[in-house]
Each structure stands twice: as C-alpha cells, then as structure tokens.
Image (cartoon, rainbow, N blue to C red; front, side, top):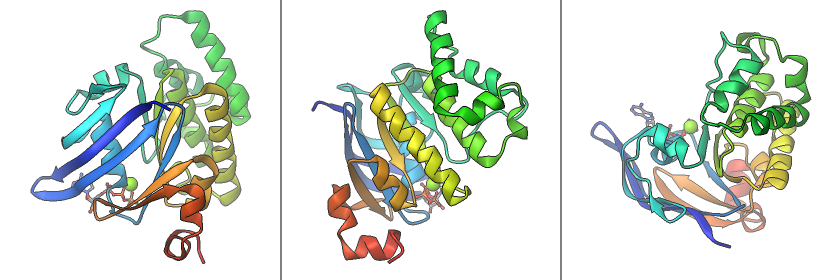
Length: 237
Ligand SMILES: Nc1ncnc2c1ncn2[C@@H]1O[C@H](COP(=O)(O)OP(=O)(O)OP(=O)(O)O)[C@@H](O)[C@H]1O
Ligand SMILES: [Mg+2]
C-alpha cells in the first residue's frame, strides 16, 4: 500500500512549552490509523499540526508533498478534512446548511446532492433533523453532523478527534459503526484520535500510543489489544 500521510519527528510548542517531541506515524492510502493516549499526551495537537492550526517542526507529507506549515484552508484544499474535538458544527445553521458548508469548495452540484443523500442514509438521525438547527441536536447528532460535514468536502483523509467524547456508550458505538461503514464504502483514509480504545480498535488497523508528546508504542490493533499495559490503561482491565 502506498503511504498517503507521513509524519516524521514532528514537534510543536504552545508558547515556550513543547508538547510534541518527535511524533512519527504513517497512514496508508485507504488505511485507518489510531492515536491513543492519556489526557494531555498531544493527540489533538498532532491533528492540529497536520491541519495547519498549530505551527509544527519536522516533516509532514501528504501524497508525497510537504504540507507542513501550510495554511488550514490550503490543507483542506489538498483533501484533508478535520473533524475537531468538540465537533465544531454551527448551531445557528440547520443540518442542511451545515452539510452545504462542508461542500463549499465543490463545483459538482450533482455530486454534492448525491453525497447529501449518502450522508442522510449513513446517519438516519440527520434525515429526521434535516431542517433543525445544529443547536437543537443531541450530542450524538452533532457528532454525526460533524462527520457528515467532513464527508461533504469529499476528502481523501479524515482526521477524527474523540468522536465518542461525552456520548452514551450505545450512541458512541452507533457513530463508530457508521464511520466504519463510511471507511469501507468510500475508501477515505482515516487518522483517529480516541481515548476509548475499544471503539478505536473497531475501526483502525494499526495505532500508536502517545505519551507526553512521543510515540510510546505502535502496533496493529490485534497486537495492542493483547498487551497488558494497553489493557490496563485503555481497555478497563
Ligand atoms: N492552546 C493551548 N495553549 C497552551 N497549552 C495547550 C493548548 N492546547 C493544549 N495545550 C497543552 O498541550 C498538551 C497537549 O494537549 P493536547 O490537547 O494535544 O492533548 P490531548 O492528547 O488531545 O488531550 P485530551 O485527551 O485531553 O484531549 C497538554 O499539556 C495541554 O495542556
Ligand atoms: Mg484532545
């Protein structure tokens, strides 16, 4: 498989404080890779380094091109959609309007209509709420909308940050099942930040564990699931 996204020795600072200290990872074309780690380990910052919303050192390549330091709108333009922690959907706009905003760069009107239909099939809750404002949605529905809005950009790579955060277990599972279906059907590559490793392992092929801004462990989902330290720290036993 060819590598779509590659990070080598990535560093990042907030003011004088270094929070990434040499993060490396690779997402193959069509693959899904997880980033696990405790609060404050640097998971969100790693995604921000990729999407250009925090300044980073090291090397970040997408489809063979250097994207480190590129403006966020240009990163989005090369085909990377970031579903941020906290979702970032627009509460004053309806579901329909949020989906259209996701597609704002696209000129293929028929393709946009077809993708709206696809999103509503993937997330039937959104179909029922199509004319509702984002602020009227439940947490689960807002998360679905955030993912669907990213789909509307027709990305090659999706960055997902804690899609399960604050959701009831059954809702979180629904959201992850839909994302797994999206992955199978669309072939979109995914880089998935998750504290709930049980959910992450349903979706990703491989994962890396970050500890204080560094890779502590990297392996396949099966390898990591079998490790005592992963079970104790992330799988509740
Ligand atoms: N805007 C900011 N300004 C200063 N420090 C920050 C900022 N954002 C994050 N940090 C710090 O950087 C470190 C890494 O944060 P980051 O948000 O990347 O962690 P995380 O792994 O996503 O954690 P969580 O699981 O809590 O979301 C933490 O120590 C955090 O306190
Ligand atoms: Mg985070």
